[in-house]
Each structure stands twice: as C-alpha cells, then as structure tokens.
Length: 149
Length: 149
Image (tube, rainbow over all chains, first blue to last red; front, side):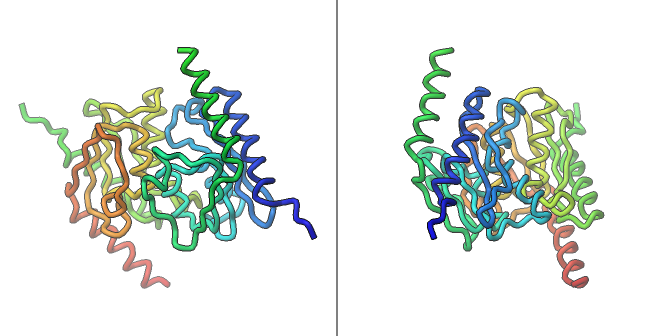
C-alpha cells in the first residue's frame, strides 16, 4: 500500500503555517506535530504579534501537542518544522522526549546543529525536506522587510 | 547610600517563588525579572500543573516581562533564578537580549554552562547567590518525591 502521509505531506502542512506567518509579517516559520499520521498541533511563529521571543512555532506546537495528549512527553510524536530549530526550541524538544524531528532548511548561524544543542538520546532528527521552498520563503521575507525600511 | 535592592534581595524574592512551586509539588525553581530595581515578573516552575515542558520559571518570566514592557527585548533587565538555566531557557534568554542573569545553584548536568548554550554577547551571567538554599530546596524535593514512590 502506498502511504500518502509521508514526510513531504506533513512538511507541506508545516509550510502552509509558514505562509500564514508570512502574511502576518512574522518571520515565516511553521510547524506541525504528528502522532500516528494525525496532526495534533499546527502553529507558526508569532514573536511579533505576541511581543514574545519565546513564541516560536516549535514552542507553541510542543505546548499544543502536550495539551492535546494530556501529558507533557511527546513520545511517538514527530515535529515537522520548515527551518531547523534554534537552541531554545531544540532544548524544549529535548525535554519533551519527542521521537523525531524533521526540518526543512538548515539555519547555519543560529540552528541547533551549529549551536550544538543536545537533543534527547532517543530523538532522531533529519533535515532537507522541502528545504528550498522554506529557505526561499524566508529569504523573500527578509528582502521585502529590508526594502520597506 | 546603602542600596537595599542588591542581588541577594532579589534572589530572595525568586526563592519565595521556588518555595511556592515546592508547595504545589513542582520542581522548586523560581525566578524574577527586575528593571530599575522594580520586579516586573515573578514566576515559578509549572511543568506539572500545566503538563508542559516549556513552563519553566524563566520562560514564563520572559513572557511576563515582555508583556509588562510592551516589547520583546529585555535590555536593561536582570533575571534572578534560583537554579542555573537549562539550554531551552538560556536559548530564550539569548533571544531576549537580557542584560544580566543571576542564578543561585549550578546545574552540573543540564545547566546551560555544561550544555554550552550560547547567550547574547551583551548578556552577563553570574552565579552562586543563595546557591546553598536553592540547592537544598531542590534536594529536599527529590528526596521526598523518591520516598513517596
């Protein structure tokens, strides 16, 4: 049987969230959390709207997924996020014991790989799913922002 | 003039928050954020109550302080926290550009120093203020928890 619910499918859903952020003038990063092929959280960056540096897509997704599950650990869950998590978000993901992280584009400067943030030993992380689209959306946002100022 | 509002004064206020967490059965860590000798946020760990790994005292304090200030950057603010921040909280503090972090006791295993989390270059961090009290409260919590199970 062909499974339509692959990493690209869920990353597209995360990308829709990134586009929603973009339309609000937020740095366009989106995330979804999935368990058993079911989306239980979908969020996008809201740092400007909420005036809050902690309001990254991943942080909100962790809170929303835990709320849905009624428990704070995200075992058997997968996070899809359009850009590699920062050290704050990777630190939160470490506490959550999430099983898998799938990101789109690398963040060479501030991503958790460059920052050497420690994930939970049971967490697997892969990247590069829809990386070009995620990266292009982010670049477009910053170019437009620069031209406005 | 003698200034009564020294690091020990504010750490005592953070310690009161840690005691409030302790009474709720939460890992007893408390925090306050101060600007111009005025407390603008006081919080304690609520991970159990909220079923949320992101509900550390520091994360809530950052959100509350930004809400008070009406802006997301915590320049000229000092965070007092009874235990050294973890990589999630240190990552959030990095985004906030907070001027100063004062912690009580070190967290040798999971603290941001061992984890090598990168703070903002303008952030100063000092530790050891009421370290013994903070450490003792934490130890008492875990001993009691172990005895209950």
